[in-house]
Length: 121
Image 1 (spheres, rainbow, N blue to C red):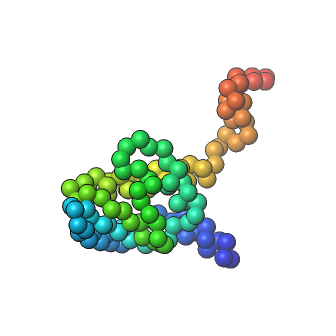
Image 2 (cartoon, rainbow, N blue to C red):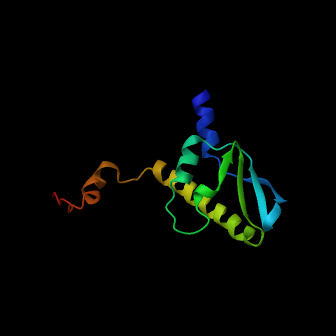
Image 3 (cartoon, rainbow, N blue to C red):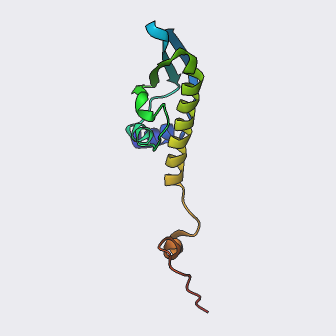
């Protein structure tokens, strides 16, 4: 029963409950985005492994339970918030693609390997 509860919780989409911003010295802003549930270890791993060359990168964000925190320049807060949203979408898109079943099943193995289809009559 516990396993099923964890699976249904992880499959549910995330919702932002609130965002809190605090001004720091030197034109910096400390931001905390609170979600409606805690992140799983797999979700955090996928988030941190996202490939990027832009700033901010996923390593600039920290997870604490259901809170994601980051410190950014005050004028760049919308850019950082958008980056967090984009990274979250990419993280959960990868998760849903990994669990998706393909209707073609084992017959699709040949095309995955780059082999041509067999035409058996």
